[in-house]
Each structure stands twice: as structure tokens, then as C-alpha cells.
Length: 73
Image 1 (cartoon, rainbow, N blue to C red):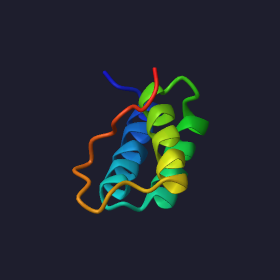
Image 2 (tube, rainbow, N blue to C red; image 1 turned 180 degrees about the vertical axis):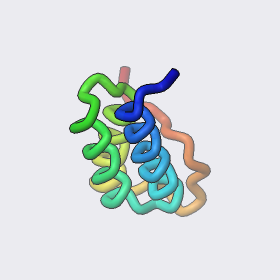
Image 3 (spheres, one colour; image 1 turned 45 degrees about the vertical axis):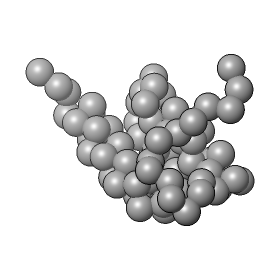
């Protein structure tokens, strides 16, 4: 069974993913940050937060398909 706290984190993460796919990286970043405050060990929220930060500095191409391509190891 998933705890109510984790359910809230999952709900917030889903909102962040929706915004991420809409290219609203600032809005998505806020959601992922909120999820991390509720659960600092939430790895997916931390990863997507970092990706949003990256895309705010260097936006993806216009034909972006939502896939994050790592540039370094």
C-alpha cells in the first residue's frame, strides 16, 4: 500500500511531467522541487528537476520528442 504522503508526491510528480511535456520547464521545475521537499529521496523528481534546469539554460530543439539526450558521462 502506498502511503498518503507518497501518493501526494506521485500526484505532484505527474503534474510536473505534464508541464515538462508541454515545454513549461519553469512550471515543471516548481512541481519537482515541491515533490522533493515532501520526499527528499524521490529520485525521479530530482532527475527531472535537473533536466528542467538544463532546458531552461539550453532549450531543446523545436522538433523535440521529449527524450533527454545526455551530453556527458
